Image (cartoon, rainbow, N blue to C red; front, side, top):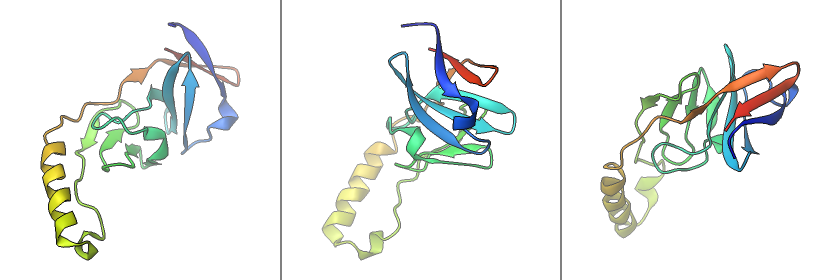
Length: 130
């Protein structure tokens, strides 16, 4: 389906927050930053993790899976994925080696910007074009 979809009331996404929704069959993350509400496809540009379970702070969205960072206004990549996890020094050496090998493969996966969707605020309703 393509067209304007009602994504809910503006009060459901206060300034400084983000929220994952389904709109017209698409997973969308709504982000309410300093310049208004933006909408992006709810999938990281690196490994497709849901961005809505990440963090939104200081104008950027950080992916919960590998900490890739994206501009909350444009979706542009602002920080590449991180393959290091805290606590690795406490794991068995075999597991550290396996993570290291996996990290080498994942580091070669290109990190794309988040796909934006047009947004319109009509009264107290947020509309997203998907």
